[in-house]
Length: 303
Length: 268
View 1: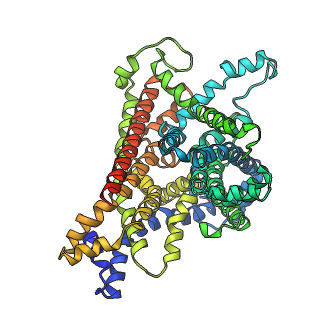
View 2: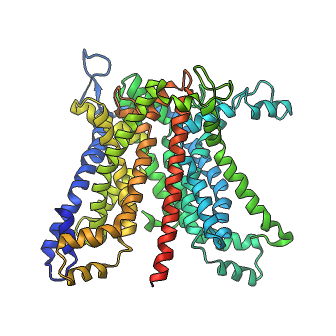
View 3: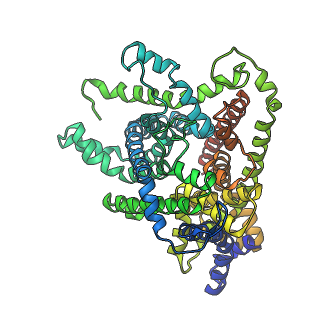
């Protein structure tokens, strides 16, 4: 039993060879699992992305090839969707950060004096996780529909053109993405702000800095690691999301993101090579953006 | 921050209240519409009823999808928790080669968009000629939960005092006894937290599931597929019930950890 073996592992009299054998036993099942169901799929995705249609084959039948033009084709056909995904995801990340920072600051710094209140507020922040992601998004769709209170109210006050819509637009998709990923932004911000030493803020004040200067020169740099994690946790899933942008949810005819086209190519038109090339492009762009962002914000040890 | 005029005093709390209220809006909406006396689609309010709560399984498809989600969630959680806990223990307690590569292998699934994970697995199953269904969903869910279990349990393992295990050995505890009587109980809160997280991730997953489910339905998949023709109020009932159950579990764990902390303070 690997678990029993673990207990002896730290005993000083055990030789290094025995130790490494136990480590191997503990690691092997999980690592093999991830190789088989995470790494191999990525490889098979790369192989699929290079396939070409089988001659005389049915729709959805492909054969192994090295058809690099698939990537060129896909960028030509879906360049607009790829660009739109990253614009939506960046906007949603910025809005989520602006929304979450004051909230996380309040819970992490101001509410410190009352631990019970602090915990309760945190439960409220993660509460949306406990209700189905899809139902939450559908709820917004109904609330913000043309017949809903919000939109008809805005129209009555002439704040919106009478024939304008909200659901089905890019703004609605960005709104949905922002809402759905706010907890992913707030939690890491909270966990760094919770450890923020408030004496440093007082020191800033004692040195005659304006509150805004203290905020930008002390608070923000000290909470950088939380900002970086929050941005990554929001941006990555937002860029690949296709629920919010789907027509049946908050999106419309002109809002399809890269996830939507991957889904329709893979599951509807059975164009596996196109879906696979798009997935590889999505992953590659995200990896590049994340690496650059992490390097520039100076928190490399995060990864 | 801004102490002039006492603005910061009430501005920030007021903002927090507004922000949290905003976060609760769709939850409240889903809950309220679980009492809607709707006929087919649940968009227009047609009066209050308890019917949907009392006869959830009138909508057979909803109930079946919910049952599948539970089976998948429990199985994937058990598999992921065992695999992930073993890795977490190894990472904290042992030194070995390829450590950086293993950390990367654990980090990458969390940094990969779900649609890529889903399409990749689906491509693998397609190449291997595996028929998609309950088993492939469980395989997929276990895969993306393992990394989250490792992160959660690792945090707990690194706070463990090795002296406690040494004491067990000094008292002639067998390796098995030391593990099951000392290490495991101390790790248990971390393991439980990891299992709950896994279940929550699995239960609410849609994208990866959709690529690997074949004809098998899960609760999120049911909602997605029927979104076009309207979701029955029974779906709101199930979502609301799960919501309150989860909130109760969280509150219980909060209270019990507070009590434990107090008790430990008293002992020391």
